[in-house]
Length: 178
Image (cartoon, rainbow, N blue to C red; front, side):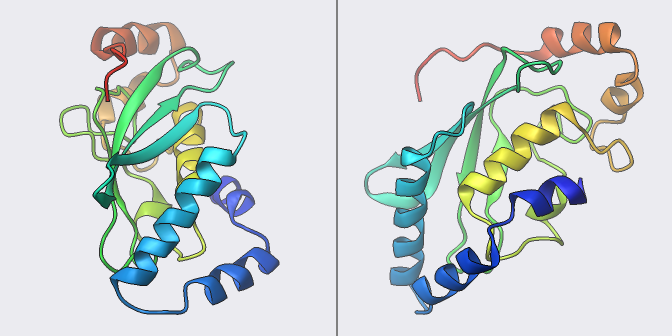
């Protein structure tokens, strides 16, 4: 997973521009950063990921969608997530959870919590919403079975047919409403 997350990190030049672009402290700089990330995400061509504020008056609460990558057991499935940004973002990671039940070794099937290093101890201010969503999409097809939140899913991962049965048992298709 380290290789995946490091390949999603912005280049050194992007790190410099991000650092200079969010040098101010306080809610204004967080709002500016989130507005910039929203525009970048809306203009990106990254397939299978999307996120946007839940309403116009609060940039700190977002809804998103992650589609399973083609060729993975999650291919063709879409999952709704919620993203809550702390007041000191990007210096602290956002809280992200699956709203759609997701049967996965690194996702709590009941609460939607996600076990992903970059959302915990490996968080860096250089990560953006887009890189986190891409990491989550990648995690769907490449779980970290050494650190499962769902041990049953981790144990079944090696048996794709049995895993898919359980995945579909818990899966709820999105209804199109936010």
